Length: 329
Image 1 (cartoon, rainbow, N blue to C red):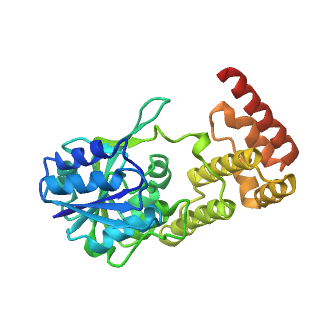
Image 2 (cartoon, one colour):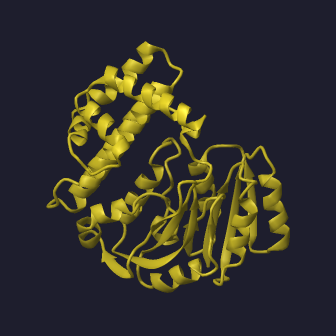
């Protein structure tokens, strides 16, 4: 049996499409777990309606605790030998779970590709049909896999419950909790199967600059994630060199945080204090000193970050915001 865990929070716009796509899977032996994480819209009622229709569905209502808390509740009540996660605003093609289950065999994890759906257009993340041993193959291909978001979200992945054991998502972490979860799981694996199927649709239609909020510990968190990736490689594949993709992601995350700081309603003193946490971090400066062939919009702020130029970064992002407003009017 495969337990499908769906954390649900205020997802009434897409939830029916998500649940229907799960119920219509050609792989039928499912334990469908809907965790209503204190939704304030009709999501909880929609979950209950589907429960009345399909006997494979179980619904649990809880106080809001965040996506990690909801996933952990699902893990606590899961009955299947295998585990997968689907976000409540995403959907899957009818063949996804059957194709992943057909490939996992004696492997410890099966990973499929997915399509990111956004206003900017759809982008596919795909893999070859191959078997990767851990740590040799996974770590030697770390940058290639990381660039394809292999280590990040738990979507389009099948885990084994006996390997997970008591492992849970860290609900105290608001940024990169998926990355940490997958690193911990992989450390217990011997073989991972990647599957060429692209039948998961990752919905980013509601994600935009306006919905992103600055959290007090975001700067410490992106540095922690960077170090976690480095420590993982150092422990399991010590002969590898520096990961370019880890540095690149650290650089991009830092630039995006600097932009959020500039646009925040904090006082100028608070903004300066937060920004300088990053701009005085030697590892961040080193990461920004590399040219990763990033989109042109990152070129100037990357160079300014490399020089620690907080005042010029503020000017750049203020001008960028004004130009964006003019173009949108």
